[in-house]
Amino acid sequence: MADRLSIDFSEGDTIIVFQREGLPYWAIYLVTSDGETINESLVERFW
Image 1 (cartoon, one colour):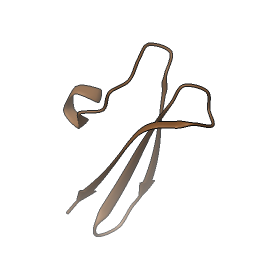
Image 2: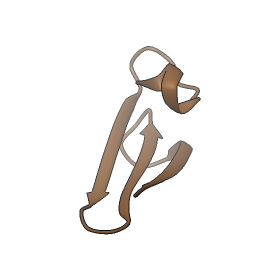
Image 3: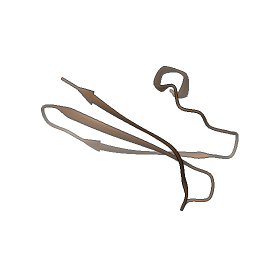
Image 4: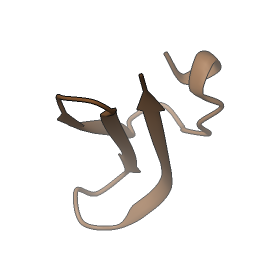
């Protein structure tokens, strides 16, 4: 998944995904190493 989304992350990091269904369909990806600090983020919109 990270290669497809061009997200940089290290081993041990967690990718959290929030999704909103409907039109458009939104997906928000957050990368965190400690559960509090956001290291990387990405938003995708699907039709």
